[in-house]
Amino acid sequence: MTQAQVVLARLALLGLVLAAWQFLPRWGVVDARLLPALGDVLAMLGQLLGRSQVHEAIAVTAAEVAVAFVIAVPLGAAIGVLAAENDYFGQIFKPMLFYVFSVPKSIFLPMFILIFGIGFEQKVAYAAFSTIFIVIMSATAAVESVKSDHVLVARSCGATRTQILLRIYVPSMMPVLLETLRISMIFNFTGVMIAEMYASRTGIGHLIANWGENFQMPQLFAGVILLAAVAILFNEVVRHLEVRVSAWRT
Amino acid sequence: MSAINVDRLSHVYSGTEGGVPALQDITIDVDAGKFVVIVGPSGCGKTSLLMMLAGLRHQTRGAITVAGKRIADPDPERVGVVFQEASLFPWLSALDNIEFPLALRGTPRDDRRRRAEQMLTLVGLEGFGARYPHELSGGMKQRVSIARGLVQDPPVLLMDEPFAALDEQTRMTMGHELLRIWSTTRKTVVFITHSLTEAVYLADEVLVMSARPGRIIDRIEITLPRPRTYEMMATDTFGRLRERIWQQIRKTE
Image 1 (cartoon, rainbow over the protein chains, first blue to last red):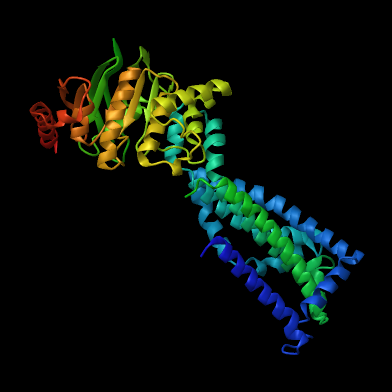
Image 2 (cartoon, rainbow over the protein chains, first blue to last red; image 1 turned 90 degrees about the horizontal axis):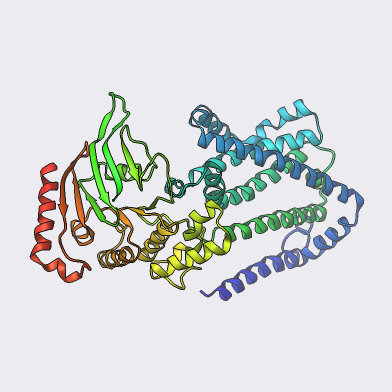
């Protein structure tokens, strides 16, 4: 298949799904109370975006996501690099990190509520906690993706430790690091949403949970579309960067 | 004048039972401008020796002098190294790979670009500077690697089985190309290989090493005239030299 055919097929599939969403509820094939027509959902989304309550919720959620991300990524990356580069630290902490990584983080949410109460800190702390393990694992893998041959070549060219770090480690790790950024954002976003939906007074997750409980389906789907759009946009921007810096990876 | 002098070098790997002797009492003297090839069975310590010549690894005993000065750490102005399997940096273009050693020293951009272009021409890759390693064939990658080893104009070039990963035909061509580059630059070359044909074809002198602990057990002067040609491989002299090296290696195993 040519590139054009692939794009065409994808657009056709998307069109089909959207058309089904629009017409199946209208024709009464599916219950419009459970799945409101796409047109109604989009109209609702337009309305919601005009409300100050929604603006506040978006601002709160965005702040939580940003702060949790800024805490989890550098901290996780530092721990991951340390675990990979320092044998002593790695041998002691790696098994524990791997064990905790395998446990679903949502079971710890009640503890975060007990420690921080319900609010900004609790949601940020929980999201950072649920993100940091994937960052640690990926950072470890990133360090291990640096080839010892390349370090040897650099040393033979007289590179200092700093030069090896900047000219060999950073470019070698960049594709994996960007991938980490992308995947950790998925975990981070999920963490904030779970925290907001479980117990919160503000935020998009809280609104969505409320709409669901009150059977306000157009609002619920409008929220889903909004979140999906933001998540996909972030993911695609980073993926685009990833492709650009890893053109050499074959 | 000797370009490389190795004086009673020995090396012991620290291990669980008091250490494993890897290299034993190695003494080598290479005159400037000579092409020396080291052969020996796998695991005899050839690569270790080369790493020590490059200052990348430290020996237990003995001294290495290159261009009149002791080698303790890597010094790209005295010693260029070409590794097995090109080991180019895949995120840099061919030209940037060649410039890498100069960039480390902070050579001005224009100077290093001009120098790298010269090297690219020397190794016969004019016009390929913008290509990335994954866009180059195995032989081309090794040419870039040689250019990188020569870019700082060191008097000595060390080569660790540089053509081992290439197919037979490319390997022959690259050997021939290396001799051409060597004859225009007049570097002192120390070249490690497993191929006896390659050894005889390239060398002024072949050093044969024994199995571990590695020692120099024979030095064979290759009297074939220069420039070497492919036809020489079919001569009796070539066959006899090759046979002598083979006998020595067989004895050690």
